[in-house]
Picture 1 (spheres, rainbow, N blue to C red):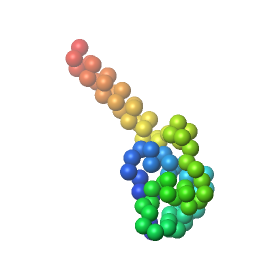
Picture 2: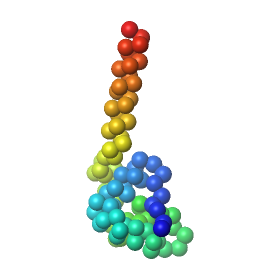
Picture 3: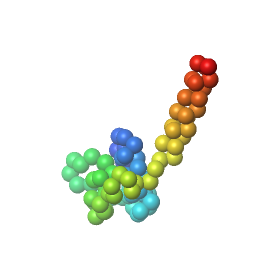
Picture 4: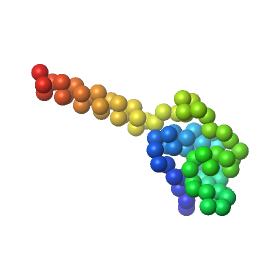
Length: 84
């Protein structure tokens, strides 16, 4: 089965938005119906579904983004403790 092409965080967030909006099976069905040689980017899948993707600010956050922020803060605290 074909998978969406998620090349960056924004694409991951767009895919999450599409899945929340229409369901994963409907989004994957649309992916299978992409015309011609179009790549399976979320934008192209949304077009098949007749949807316009929202502005980046309106896309859902990724759980991993929060985890990355927490990890960076923890690493900063560790580095600060090592210097002191």
